[in-house]
Length: 124
Image (cartoon, rainbow, N blue to C red; front, side):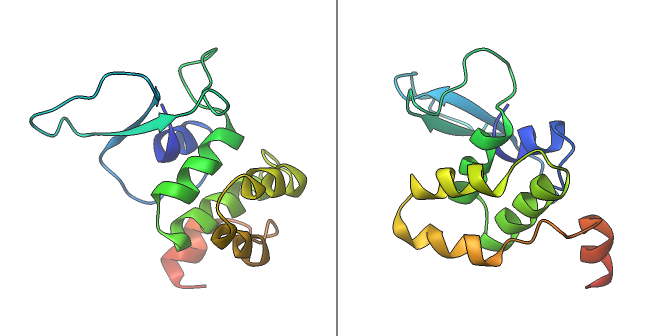
């Protein structure tokens, strides 16, 4: 599992979604035809995690930054920081490996956010 699906597995806040996000090696074959209800994340060797069926928090954070809306990604990252499943130091390392446009995310995350589901539900 990858991205939002992995975030949900790790107990992070996730937006409503019905697709299963899957991490695949960059050399894996492509699938064609009908949509199977999955979203594939083609990963380079540097980011691939072959030792478990569920991607780690640092790997899924990179994926949500590339896959989700900015607001969703920031909320998932806030959740990871708040639950201490990700440090700011590690987040900076992840963001530094992405295109420069992602650097501003560092100014927007806030690991002090409490229960993000309640905050989102009530517009706080």
